[in-house]
Image (spheres, rainbow, N blue to C red):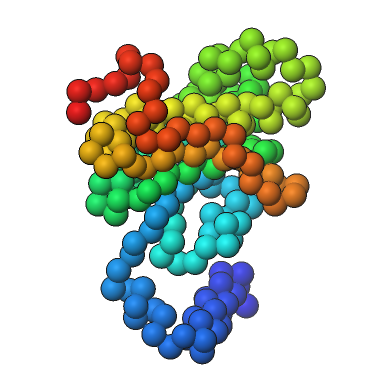
Length: 210
Ligand code: CO
């Protein structure tokens, strides 16, 4: 059997288990999704949003990319953000990074990852530059990268707050709250590291008359 065929078999078994427990499960879910959360996480296979939060289909709207970045020219991310905030009306947006993130580690080196990855990882180098003083003072390499993971999450949450999508929702409906979390690969635990409640004031340079 090919490795991918195992996935299809497991899918069948999974669907049957759910249906045995609740025969109308899929029919009900197919009609409507009302997730309360948007999750912006890393693509890393070890950080599955629903598994680590004990949530089920229908509960979390998910966007994942390398190193959980919120880039203001990323049409994919912005479409997910706009749809989930404006249409689905999620109450919370969670940016979840993880310790041991390959993307973060790669961005902290001088290695040439070739044009496309360099372009993406450049955003993380900018986070490093913004917090250079704090980061350079950490002598232990692993601890420095761990802190960069946390600061990256913080900056990505702030990037969300810089969008008119979030600013409009904050003004009209006092939601969503923005959360920055970091997941630990070594213990399976999520640590909240940053938060911006709806309406939080920050640098007026990024505020729009929405
Ligand atoms: Co990662």
